[in-house]
Image 1 (cartoon, rainbow, N blue to C red):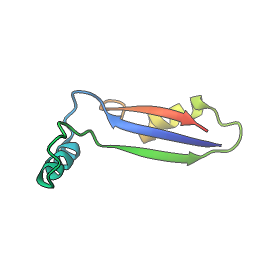
Image 2: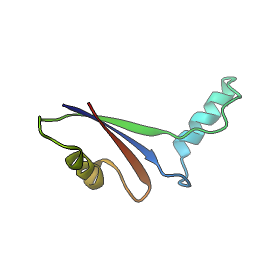
Image 3: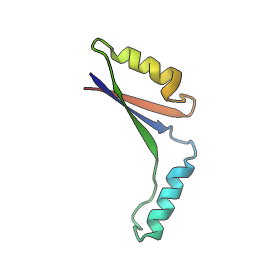
Length: 76
């Protein structure tokens, strides 16, 4: 089984990487971009029987800094 975890900074948390991307896009002539939020995607290959609750525990303990980041889990 596979899981995809998407981790993003929470709203209101400064995103300097996103701002650098927005600035670079503007410098390349892409003027229609008003804001960018940069995050990460983590793909996990899981043993059969590993549930969403266990993946969420992984996120809470290691994969996401829940003080400043939110995460979304997708199982496939």
